[in-house]
Image (cartoon, rainbow, N blue to C red; front, top):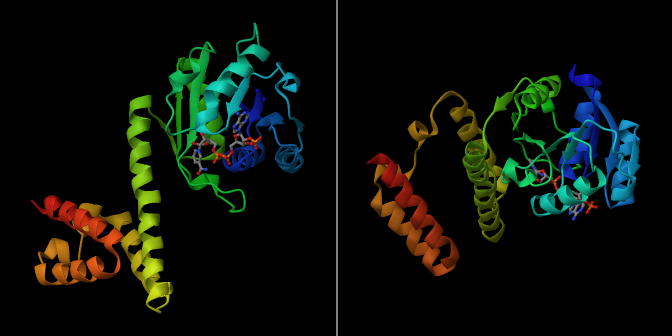
Length: 263
Ligand SMILES: NC(=O)c1ccc[n+]([C@@H]2O[C@H](COP(=O)([O-])OP(=O)(O)OC[C@H]3O[C@@H](n4cnc5c(N)ncnc54)[C@H](OP(=O)(O)O)[C@@H]3O)[C@@H](O)[C@H]2O)c1
C-alpha cells in the first residue's frame, strides 16, 4: 500500500509546498518537512500537520521515502548530506527535477528515482494536481511500482519515462512555457509603449491554445510567415530595426523557422 510508507519532504519551496499538500490530501503520510528556512518549514508543516526540521542532523532516519524538492544545483549536495545522515539505511530517494538525471543520486543511494510534476509552480498560486502529469522513474522495479501507486493517488496522469526522455521533455517544456511567456512579455512591452491594452491580445492567446488541444500545432500555423507574405514581413522588420533592434533578430529567426516547417 503506497499510503503506508512514511515520507520525508526535503525542500519547502514552490514544489515542496504544493506537493506536500497534494500528497497529504491524498492520504499519504508526510512524516517531516525539511527546509533551511524555519519560516518555510513551518509554513508547510503547519499546513499539512507534520513535524519539521531545519538541520540535517534533525532529519528523521526512519522514513522509507525521501523526496528532494530542492533546486537542481542543490540536489547533489543535499543528497550527500542526506546520505551521511542515513548511514546504513536504504530508503528510496527521489528528486522532483525535470532537468536533472536520476543518476545524480546514484553515488549516494542504492534506491533512487524521480517524481517530476510537469507544471509551473509558485507558492502563491493554487494548483490542481489532478490535472498535472507526473513523470516517474526508479532504478528498481518495486520502487517504480510504489512511485506509480503513490502518484496515482494525486493524479491520473502518470508516465514512466527515462532520463533521456525527461531531458528532451524538459526542453519541450521550456519552449512551450518559458519561451512563449517571454514572447507574451515582449508583446506586453510593445502594448505599453504604444498605448494599447495587452488584454486585446488575450482572446488570440486563448484561441491559439484551445486550437492545439484538438489539432497539431504544426497544422494550425497562420500569419505572414506561413503565407509567404513578404511585404508584411519586410514592413515588420523595418519597424523593428528602427524601434526594437533586439526584437528584429528574434522575429527573423522565428519567421525562418515557420518557413522551414512549410517545406
Ligand atoms: N517551480 C516549478 O515550476 C517546478 C516545476 C517542476 C519541477 N521543479 C523542480 O522542483 C525542484 C524544486 O523547485 P522549486 O521551484 O520548488 O524551487 P524553490 O522554490 O527555489 O525551492 C527550492 C528549495 O530548495 C532548498 N535549497 C536550495 N539550496 C539548498 C541547499 N544547499 N541545501 C538545502 N536546501 C536547499 C530551498 O531551501 P531554503 O528555503 O532553505 O533556501 C528551497 O526549500 C527543482 O528541482 C525544480 O527543477 C520546479
